[in-house]
Amino acid sequence: MKRRLERKTAGELGDEAEVDLFGALKREFGGDEIVRVPKGRNGADIIHRVVEGTACGKLIYDAKAHKRWLNSFTTKLRQDQVAEQADHAVLVSAVFPAGAQQLAVRDGVVIVHPARVIALAHLLRRHTIQLHTLRLGNEGRAEKTAKLYEFMISDRARHLWDQIANYE
Image 1 (cartoon, rainbow, N blue to C red):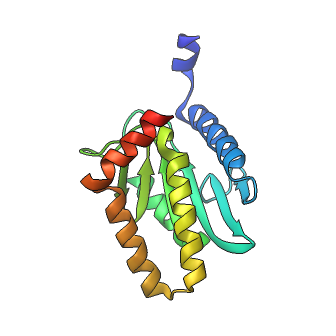
Image 2: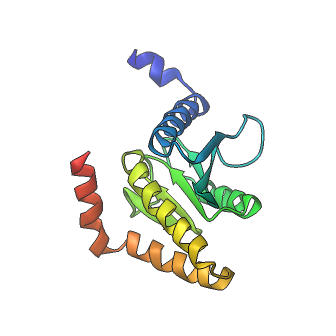
C-alpha cells in the first residue's frame, strides 16, 4: 500500500485531496452551493457560494498535495480569485512557504493546513456574510479583509488555532 501511494503522481494525490475537501465542505455547509470545477477547466478546484437567505459571496479553494512549496500556487489562485470575483481564496496544503506553518497569507491568498480548513471556512464564511450585510464598497471590503487576515496569522490568534486543532 505504501509503495502504491509513493507511485501516485501529484495530480492523483491532489485529486484525492480535492475530493476529501469537497466532501468535508458539503457536509459542513449543506445550505451553501459548493461545486467542483471540472478537470481541464481553468480556475480553482472548488467554488463555494455562501448562501444565507440569499447569495452573499464566494470562496474558492485549491487543494495541493505536493512535496515542496511553489510560489506559483498562490499567484495562480489569486488570479483565479480575481477572475471568479471571489471574496476569499483558500489554498489547502500540507506544505508551506519557508517560515510558515498551519496558516499563512501570501499574495492575498490564505494558505491553510487540511486539518484547519473547516474552522477557517467557518470564519471566512461569517466574514463574507457580514460584509454582504454591511454592503461595504470595495475599499471597505479590502480594509476589513486585510484586518481579518492580519488577525488570523497573529500571535494572539495562534493559540486559538492550536485549541481548535486539539479539540478535533
